[in-house]
Length: 401
Image (tube, rainbow, N blue to C red; front, side, top):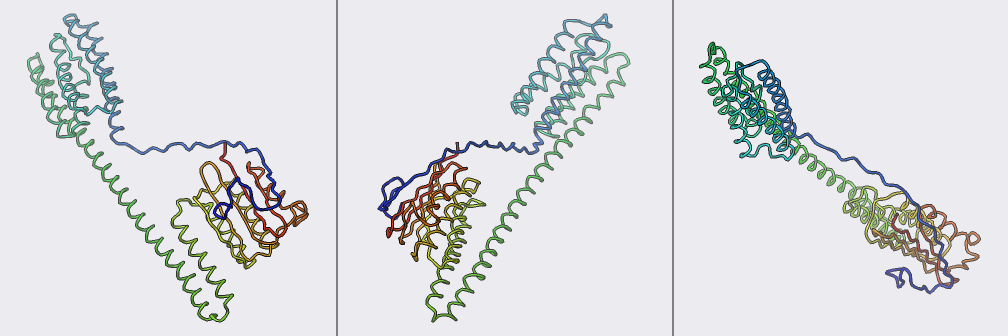
């Protein structure tokens, strides 16, 4: 046994050595789908893109109508305006996809493009304005980047542009007055964007505080649990030891049991695993100690999360401990275990009377019984024993492939 004068693959002082090997079992793995959280900025970003796309469609329809029905329109200016709108709409989608929609250079250029498209109808001598919703979409971009404080000034500039253009047209007073729609739109959108972001910040802060509160409660619960365990086990055991001080065997047993319980408690608080391989082995050893009143000296290196394969190893170790406690005549059993990423090993050794491996307890069935427990999970079992030389059982489980 490693740690007791033996290597995992080295020779042992026992007379008979036999390995029983099985091929590993192939199993699949399950992928857990990733989870996602709500991102308000992502939602608003694509709202801006969707509004711009609809504004472009609106403008495209108006430009086509102007080119077909308006004999006085300048086709070159109208064509340049729709090409600019098309290119800028595509660029807006690219900036949104790369999370750069709030880039100050892009936002400033976008405002200029909005103003140019807003004045294209006047430059083309069109009877009706064909800019559609493109100037409004420019306000939406600024609202995304800077909120109301950025959207409102731009809306005033666009409204002033449209007022000056339309006031000079015959009967354009009503259209000029209608330019107030741009500041109104900016106020509504700016307040909406600012409110959504502020609520998102409040939600994130509330979640952060909730997590901190949950951690604090969990910390208090762990402390209370530890205090309860110490009270229920340590204090009661000390009281029993005090009343039975003359019974040395009983005192020794109670002290040993209390040592195990404290070790379990410490291991549980240290272990990152919810269902620990180390804890399962210690529980098996404790059961043997309480049942047969023998000492099981346990050394375990590393730990792992329990699964079906490790469950088979624990059961095989339990059976080896039981066999030693019942048949070896030794008052102490050693168990050493390693739970590495590539391999799991468990060694159970006693310094008892041993037996002839071909005619051991149960008609020589110990080795076969242990091997059958790990056969389905791809393990190997070695039993080393000889009369008057004790018994060592080695269980090895390779990494699952």
